[in-house]
Image (cartoon, rainbow, N blue to C red; front, side, top):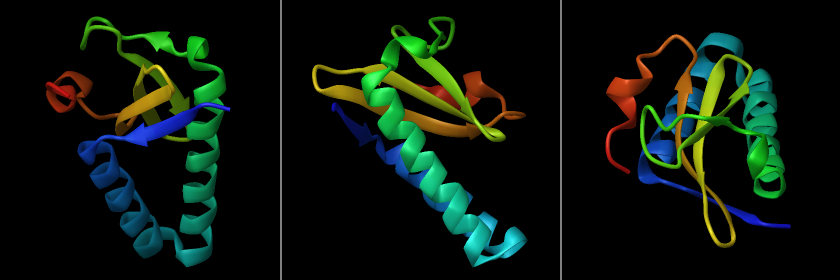
Length: 99
């Protein structure tokens, strides 16, 4: 099994998503969503070819949905680098930047 790494921006996205989830839906639901997100990261390490090409945002960038979020990632020698985890309604181009 490959490994996933998180960019600093992705870690911030996840922390923010979790905190918002706790406030809006409660601790139990936030934990379930977080656990599912981590499972999706692990799935992507072994199935990185399943992502949608997002070269229009950055070279070699791919995306894959999870709930109402979109996981942006790139392939690495050992798995994937999770670049951002953004809400599906967000302006992706304005949030991807250089990673």
